[in-house]
Amino acid sequence: MKMVRLGATDLKVSRICFGTWQLSPRFWGEIPMGEWREAVLAALGNGINFFDTADAYGDGFAEEQLGDVLREAGVRDDVIVATKFYWHVEDGGDRYYPDTRADYLLRACEASLRRLKTDHIDLYQIHAWDPLIRPEEVGAAFEKLRQDGKVRWFGVSNWNAGQMALGRAHFPLATLQPKYNLLDREAEASIFPYCLEHQIGTLVYSPLERGLLGGHCHPGQEFSDSRAKNPLFQGKRFEGLLKGIDQLRPLAEEAGLTIAQFALRWTLTHPAVTCAILGVKSARHLAAAPAAEDVLPQDVWHLAARIMEKAAGTPA
Image 1 (cartoon, helix red, strand yellow):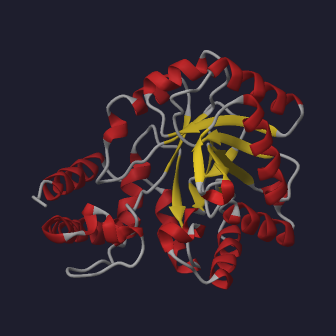
Image 2: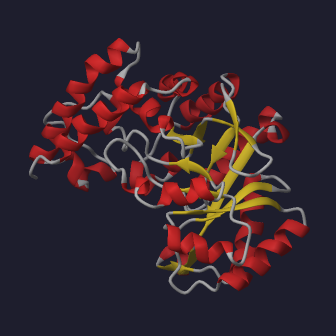
């Protein structure tokens, strides 16, 4: 697996990052944990050294499971672990709210360290923008974690360019985790130019748009997880997108790729994208990973973008 430098950090990461959002039962239902653990080991065996999780994924379950597998495999010092904080949960989950206050940030980090069974986090990220954030307070807490050796680098997720500029004035912002794929290109407008200008590494999520760009969906398909209420997976819009994906198949075949590999390579071709987070439930979901070894020709990239832009215009 090709390794790249993550922004201006000293972290060398695989272009595929193993994502653990799938260990969130309220979004994805229960998954076979034996298969998931085998997938982690398969990823390690294929050179993937970057793992992204969050305290919100399964209310700590994803961190616990990832920590267990990495410890049992004896590879913690050989991999890069990223996690996130943001949601302050109280009353058994009945009350929750964004919280980036220094005291909560420090407590959240300690809790993640325990669940991950490690003494440090390589990349600690704010999961989303907190409208009540006090950047100078966050900066002080981040600096304490750095000095204590508990966090190496800091990043944010789902922030826009203005928010990143505000954060950078108070703490070293190394990375951004935005959504980006053939169907969601909002990041191209201002976020990616800002990241390129300031050497901010990007680990983009949903490169396959919850499996829609994986090439296995079909008209009339019903979903039992969070996709059941997602408009992209409903009615005429869903059918229109599937027709667009069918138009991508000749392009993928010409490149010797599956649809999933083609969509992933399309995402990784953008010069602002450092790596892509691939959500994994079982080892078979790693089949798209080899696409990270190359990029698409410029004309093919733009042609695919036009095809899916037209398909996305199908009325709901």
